[in-house]
Structure formats: C-alpha cells, structure tokens
Length: 433
Image 1 (cartoon, rainbow, N blue to C red):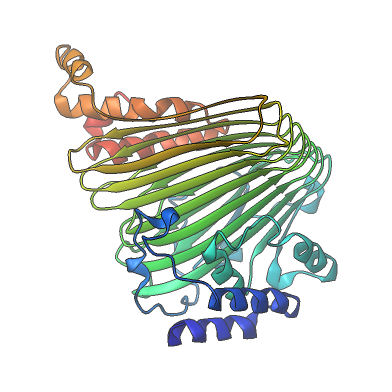
Image 2: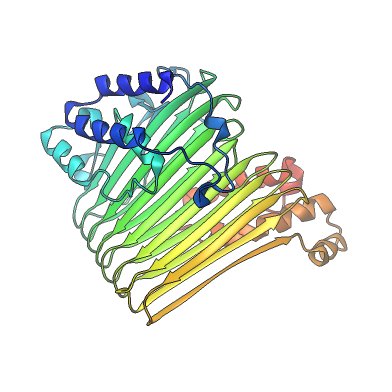
C-alpha cells in the first residue's frame, strides 16, 4: 500500500465505532493480500485502473455551502451526504411509525450494531470483488435501513451522495445495508452526483440489499457523476423465498466508472427485474458487470440493459446468468442493446449463460448498431432537421426502459435530464417532453 493509503486506513481505524473493529481488521488483512486488478484479468480486460494510480487525500470536511435546490424531490424521506458525511440540515427522515428505521453505523446502539454485524458483508464475495476489501478496511461509517416485517413504506427513501470536489483528489467509502423484512414493501433510491467536474473524487461504494421471505423492494441507482469523477461500486443482493427485487440503473460516463451488480436467488420463487441505461459521451468510460446466481428452483430473472455510446467514449457490458445444478424450473432472460452515435465510439459486450440444470427456459443476446439512415431519412422528409432527428431516435432507443420506471417522480425527472444530455440545445428536444 502507498503511504497515503496506509494513513487513510489508520485514520478509519481510529474513528470507526468499536464494534466495527473486527470488520476493519479483516478487510485490511484481505486488502493487503489482494493482487491489484490488471487488464490481464478477464473481468478488467477493457477497463484500465490507471486513473487510480495517483495520490488521494482524505475526504474534506463537509462543505456548508453545498446546495440541494437542483436535487429533485422524489420523496419526503431524503438523506443527504456530502463527501460521505451526513448533512442533517438538508435531510428529512421518516419516523419510526412508518415501518422503517434508518440508522447510521456511527450512531448504532447495541441492538442495531448486532443486527448490522449479523448481515454486513454476507452477500459480498470478497474474493471476486477486491474493492469490497478496501471498503471494509476503510469503513468508519455507513447507513442501515431496516424495513419491518409486513410494513408497506409508501414514500421512497432517497439517498443523495454528493462529491463536493473541494480537493483535487480524495476518497470516499460509501456503505449501505438494506434489510427488507418478510412480506414488506419499500423503495430505495441511491443518487450520486458531483459538484466539481475537475476533481478526481474517488467513491468506493458497497450497497447490500437483503430481501427476506416475500419482501418486495424497488431499487433505483442514479450514477450521474461526470467528467473526472472516479467510481467503483458493488451492489450485492440476496433474495429469500418469493422475494421480488425490481431495480433500475441510470449511469452517465466519467473518467472511470465501474458497477458490479450481483443477485443471489437463494429462495425458491424469487424474482429479479434488472433494467438499466448507460450513456457515456466525450472521452468518458463506463463498465457494467452483472451476475445473477440461480441456486434454487422456480426463480425468474428479466434483465435488460441499453447503452448509447457517443463521441470517443467507451463502454463495457458483461452480463452473466449462472444456473446451478439444483435450479430446475428456472426462467431467465438477458438482453443488451447498444447504439453507437459515432464511428469512434466503442462498446465491448459479452452476455453469458452458464447452465448446469436441464429443465430451464433461458435466453440471452446482444446487439450493436448505429442510427438507422432510413429512419433518419423518414424524419427529415417530414421537415425534421438531421440534428433533431438524431436526438429523437437516440431518445427512442432507451424510451421503453424509461417508460417502464414505476416511480413517476423519477420518470418525470429522467426525461428532461436525458433530453438535455442528448440535445444540448433545448430546441432540439422540443418533441421529447
């Protein structure tokens, strides 16, 4: 480890709650024995970690002048974090009578600490996700969302993670643990943005979603940091009997952005919906790896990701569905479609099916295409300029997934956001809104 990295881990060890010390010690031991991922490793073949080969400082103290007026109001339940530090004055928390408890690791009492330790890290295969070890080694705080059994939380829980960019390069370790009790219903939104696009703020995040029997969780993740932002994330999910996870990912590009989403079907009858869009521009890069583990019978998965890669940007999509020998009566489908709007844009896609059961219904596929000249000609022949036609066709490529978002407030937010991203000029997006 670098001298700075050693200092950062020492600092975390002194500020973390006493009950987390074992997690830090285990994480540090595993991180010190970890081989740094290189392009010789298949999982990192198309993504360089060179942007991380620099000196990072500790995260700055939370800036007091960080505004939130431009952050949408998805819900009354909003928790804001700036550079990993909780901002009480900008947050509105739901009461315990709503059936959900939200606790910071640093403020957890004995009962909450015991419950967190019982579940923390259980969904993460650290030997496959090396940055999870670094997260454990530097963990000093986190957020625990505990949804009571049979509770129906009607208001979404909106978590806003802001990088202030007050230093040229610094690290933030983000950690979330959600436990959805049996037969409960809840919605969680994780929203990542950066205020200074020239700062190389490095977010190393781990989110764990544990769904107990019959639980239904809607999970939305908006990774909207831009430019020089660095983000490596792991989203790890565990589904018990008849649990249902509906997830949606919206990801813009940056200097380095890597998402690993892993779902374990551990209970019979579990269902997973995983949809997402990724939209790199300029010279940005995005790497999305998903893995669905079907370990038991009678589970279903519907996965659909679409990417629009523009300019000189690059993207990676690797979707894997693993059907274990005992996972009979499984139905799983994976689709990845990509649109290149420039002859310099690049996509590396690899959908995978690994099947060891003989009574299953599975399908997978990937496409890579450019804008259809016939469709462009059709629009232009009806008085639409080429620039506006390109915007309309690009938006139409992902519109089906945006329309499928169940949360109307989020859907209404993404439409103008995407229109501005595609068009630049509001006049070109007039037919999209």
